[in-house]
Image 1 (cartoon, one colour):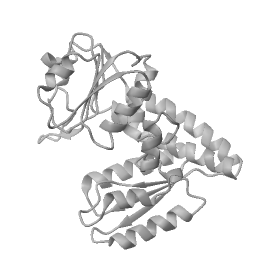
Image 2 (cartoon, one colour):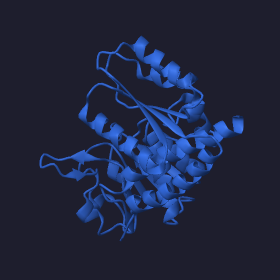
Image 3 (cartoon, rainbow, N blue to C red):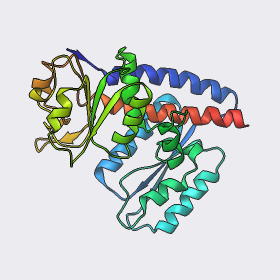
Length: 283
């Protein structure tokens, strides 16, 4: 069994981003990411802080817009419009989830697709589905880059994706399909989940349920990508995979933490750098 070390790979990619960003700054382009946070949700605040610190490490300028929980949808849309019109801002990220009184789809569509470094705009989603270059959501992009770095080809492989969210499962399925994999997308209504996972060469899971994937649910030598992150009552962070038992059967497996998480953050930085490069070309 080989650990897929996302933390180490992310660190290497960050060095490349730092160098590329330095070249852009020398040409008068300062890569800039605007992060919008609504409310005081502890997890959301932690994620935003991680993204801001990551920007600092690689020399990407970050602008944090923090608003109260009761901000109106109209006011939030106005702020996004202002950020969108600012030609010195390359990427805009709205931290999810948003409060229930705000239409999330409306907010995400308010960001122009050229600045949608989260890859959630329908335009970018459609291009990814069609196999055309676009901003891919950070977690699926991180998964694909992690597999590529370890020379794990998905071409001709059976891939089971557990979780069909718009943020992870669906876009990951598109990227896998574009790369030549045969895809099974499983979700809460799927009957006999193990039927799909046992026949898969690669299992990707991200639903937020500790120990969902057990050793008897995967075949010998499978590649296991644990995208889930859960905090137990004792404070320990775990994924959706029963790591101790599954790791004995897997050929490759991601740890939690230190696997997909760091790759998600660095993929966001890669998208922001790409947006800055696109601004340079446009100018």
